[in-house]
Length: 364
Image 1 (tube, one colour):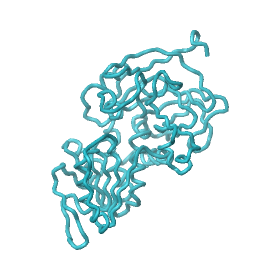
Image 2 (cartoon, helix red, strand yellow):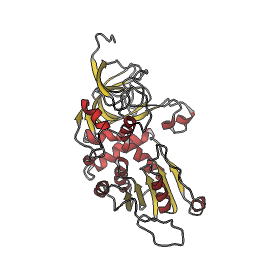
Image 3 (tube, helix red, strand yellow):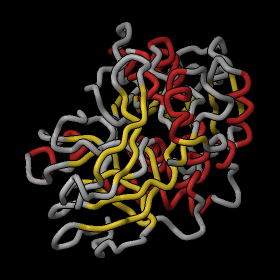
Image 4 (tube, rainbow, N blue to C red):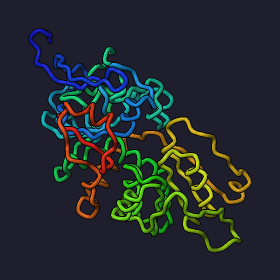
């Protein structure tokens, strides 16, 4: 398409630090396997705030943002499939995964596509690369071949669907790693967006108890509204449990612990709360932090399992949408997303203090 005659689209271009400005760029035609999307609503993941604050490395300039819901504008020659194998069509309302993978390397074929050897990520690519329109803080973006794209159920509002592509799908991956939860005592560490979502998901999966910890009282109150059976500050007493000790403490024993805060002391507390045969899933430790001491004898004698989850697989995006659709009328998902602001407010949202709701939202 000739840039001199092309339609234009507006993007919020992050130029490093707290510099974000709106720019107009030509609207491209999608190539083979690509999908041109119009963004309906984007939610602001905490990782983007960390990028702007300098806590997380990312190329600049770039268009940030990866959680969103949008409409298919056009597909490239030969079309493109949704996650169910059916071809995408103009006007389809969809969400998409964070990672774009090759599908052929050893990690992809082993079922670890999130760790594809040539992985690219929505909202993580340089503006000067061959994928300039990679982020969702824009009117349009392009999804390359290899992206996971899923249609949104008609009854699911945009503000519920948008986080499915990151927060909700990541939680579904963590719960899968935790194993069956029916009748289990579950501890969720951290009551941010992922933690609150994990509370609701664990309850939906049949957990008999869901305990949650967080230093923020308002977040703990929110967790209770999402199905937590008890909520505790980070100073609640915990002690290691062994087969003969009997009883327990405020945070133990539990069968499953899901750590989503990334705080080293929280990881230790989760380990201490596990009962015999307990399983710990680490999903919040995505930045450097102090090392965590591990009592190997207790792990061995207690038959404990510790595993990590980073990002998710394509099936988890579908599971996220299914959870949201199944619980839409019973879980107050709308409380997690603040009223949307316009695209020209993205810079303020990324650099300002966090709001009351775990997710800010933008309507380009």
